[in-house]
Image (cartoon, rainbow, N blue to C red):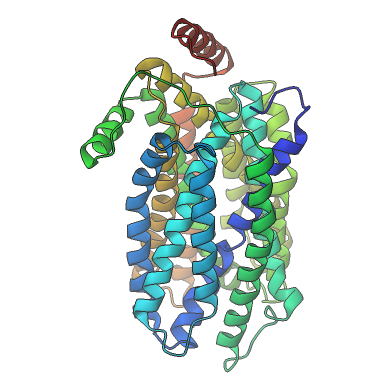
Length: 461
């Protein structure tokens, strides 16, 4: 396990490195891949949208299965490592296949390799996050572990955003070359993710200790009924329900600005294409830089209180947006910096709290279900983004928003969904999690009781 005394920084770095490769394909999957297959490959927007939606639905259903397997299976090489490495190989191969489609590629090709990509990614991220929760049982060290992982993911997104510019694929393309630019960017980022991922995955496999298997005296069986029973019992965990609800609501609050970011810059503030990268960098870079601050604050207070502070700070920044006009784009850059800084808290602190919830569940039930808990966590993340897209765009269309000729009333609808709705959602998330029952003192009690229980059973953790 990673000790809280700072003597194992290499292990912490080794654990965080795969997150770089995991985050890098985020931009090509959401931005470049759909446009490339719709135009250059020639499948059309409707077909591509339907195929990717079907692949995402399958991916969401796969999460609890992956979590259950991650908890149940034990190989000689470790509990989580084999699933991660296998999923990484599948995801890397599928990503390269999608970036280099043959001339005969059609909807079946896109569907097949998208399913493999999402499935491979799930079989990496679920055991990866569960493993992080098991690397330490100390309240503060867990925050450092999740902060290192999520900070590395933000750096991976920044790297992916810069790769097309360095390779020439990010230059503003004209109508005839737009698809070529999307394809070039997709290929560049895919290969970069693989080249970064291979040493990262090897280093984590060799340098990071695997979590010990906790014997609970119960026999695990793989069956659909067993998975359902486990899920139902998990939703009886009240601290988990409170944290899960706040995480999902705040995920929606972050999802609406994420999917409308480019549209708001274009039509709300008339920001040019050449200036957009500065605002994107102004959002993600503070997310990386401020992660250590949130970890430092958590060492002086409970994690849920610091998370509430971050959400309220983001709400205050969003409150400025409805009053901005195109001449005040510099003020919007400040909004991006503040909300980006709070993103670090959104990403680093709740997963650390989730690890504490898993300890509570283990004390109450005697079961080690870290994997399935973090699988549900992943489902909530995916569903929040899906709901944000599924709600924002239809509402804008109903309001009469047209990117080619938006009317003032429709622009107001864009501003409202971009900024006002997230404020209401974040305040709701604060209300849900403000009374979270597992703080520093409560978790210390849980740790002592778990240690006594496992000592009684003759189990060494």
